[in-house]
Image 1 (cartoon, rainbow, N blue to C red):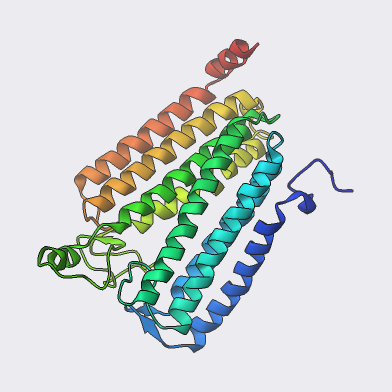
Image 2 (tube, rainbow, N blue to C red; image 1 turned 135 degrees about the vertical axis):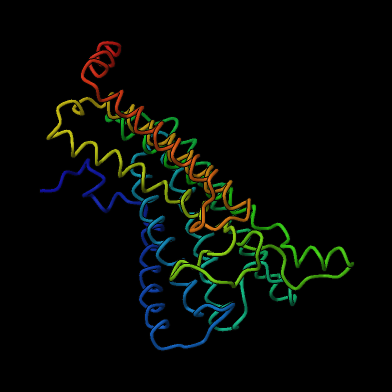
Length: 324
């Protein structure tokens, strides 16, 4: 018999509108795969169905995670339901407009200022994105008021939602003009697009397979992607440590695991800062320079070193004694 108090097995307790959104993204994902196979149209040098496919996977995963996350909210549960519902409505409308704009109208979505209809669609999409950012911020505040039995998972949920919030905020950086757009503005003209994913190069150039991230310049989609999916990574770290505790007694205390989760969260925040710094310098993710590699090595060393210190038997025992 399923444990009615366990949100992992009691699906009825999950936020219904977010679950519906995730289901809709599953349908769109299947349709996008068919489109990639049988529709040879392209837009900005990429298959026209590629962006809907990527959004369906990312939004569907995020919606399910947020739906599960809200099962942990006890204080302010009704407010949490509304936050999740507004998030689902805003992002659902955005993805719907992506399909309309790209698949049915054959126009680019982001940054498109070519016609009044394009401007109106962009404004609605921006409104949905800002609503999602605000609702995620509200969920972070709610989680700060919760006290879960497992302190490691409590920290993981807080760090994860905070990182997701930062990842959404990074997306605001893409609304700066590219060099070509700035040249048009300096000449007193009005560019047909405003903003770009890439830094130092124009959008639509060589990119990684499927992901499309630029291989010749910086790309702000990378830190944006890494940040929003911290909401999955940090809880997975907490669950992974809990699973390892069966084999390694030193991880049996949730206080020790909480320290490790906090170290992982700080390391992930450092990675997010590193990826943002790299992108803003116009540097491709596949061609890091010495400074990027050195910063990455220092970050990795600091995280591994701090983790090694925490799991040492003597330190673990001191953590337990200090909590008594």
